[in-house]
Image 1 (tube, rainbow, N blue to C red):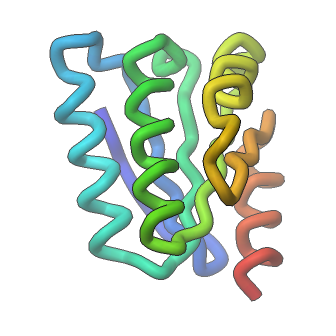
Image 2 (cartoon, rainbow, N blue to C red):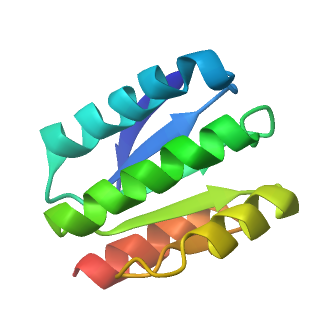
Length: 116
């Protein structure tokens, strides 16, 4: 369901599939464990095409709240325009604001520059 790698000093967490509502908590825990293990490294969460449903969006928003509390920079990359709109709309009110990119390389570059 989740894989991770480092690119340019950025933790890239890729969500490969939608866990459904019953495994949303597991996804949230997996992402949170990676964030805690590698903090204060900036994080880019990449949502593959099969991972853009409401349970994934919910888990990513929970991870964003955690990152805000921990002072960890987090952004998201997804090709899916509906998922981008959901993430942007539901992330209002959290500081720093969640930045959602359409391209993974752009998200990683922006995280690298912002963390420098």
